Image 1: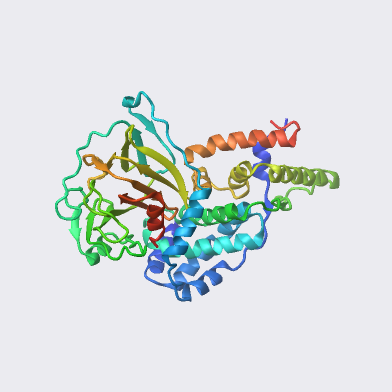
Image 2: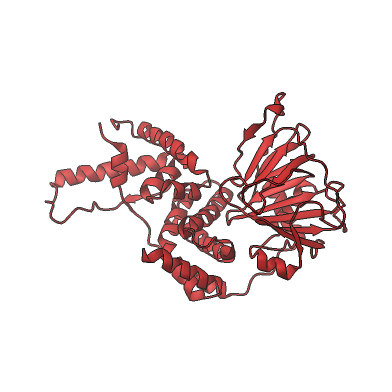
Length: 186
Length: 248
């Protein structure tokens, strides 16, 4: 439980003009902010610009942040809003390219046979390919919940919708993902 | 049958490497702030934003008396469609009688409402009166070139800033005569309400709603950074949007 206290203190110091404290806050959240922007923008250069601008705007708005509340969803709201605005004015974009990371396996487990590994890899690629072909709305809600592993509340913050909307949107989007995969998913 | 939820949960993605945002942001914050944009580009941008915005005109229900609750996207605002019952305010000195709270100086306002940001729209200048009450700070602007006096408030423009929060704390009552337009301003959800409508906001005790009063044309913008801006007056939509956008 050391982290929230530490973060509150950093927020207080950043508010008082401590640039190092704000840099520490950015460092703590830059991975998630950048990946969220990447999910929305679809390429690393635009995601970097959007996340950077989001953090600059968040710094300006820091005095409006309510002390004691979690910083992460607040930052996500600002960064994702910046990315969505940029995405909207950019018009069409290239398809989102996502690659599956290698499977993490406990070291005590025997390595799978080459055939099993190949099959698992193919399935992961098929899943990501199907996600990339979905409409933006479906792709974003699935991406936030499963790829970024955001909570429902954080997903709502990133998508700019009410928390109650996330659950129903996710279940509809999963339906469409099943249809896109066109196989025997439950 | 495969379990999609389980497979997605197990799926991990190879994200592109995160750039050094902390260094880039720190470098940008050390640069001097850019010069504020002039009125004209702001207005042009606002018009473009409007063109892109989608407008929704609510059809007045013949059975509007049934007080149908309408949730329309702004988390801090509740809009109810029924005839407003509130009496028009009785303006004496600028902003008095509008239930805005305690009159304060600019320095006191900044102390009590640290979230206060003064709009920088051209021709507006400094507010003529400032009030702090509950969760809001209210800036009252008297008649000036480009801003006519409102018969509803007695002032030309009333700008209120609130710290938005989840859950409704501004209550608006939109009657048959009022028209409600849903907009986005810089990506933030917003409403523009034309015609007399009721307006109330949550008082200092955080529970009770103040007595309703009649309000004139009103723009409500809920920014992603948590600032809720309310602009009221004898004011056209585009001017209200430009004004809201001039709040840093």
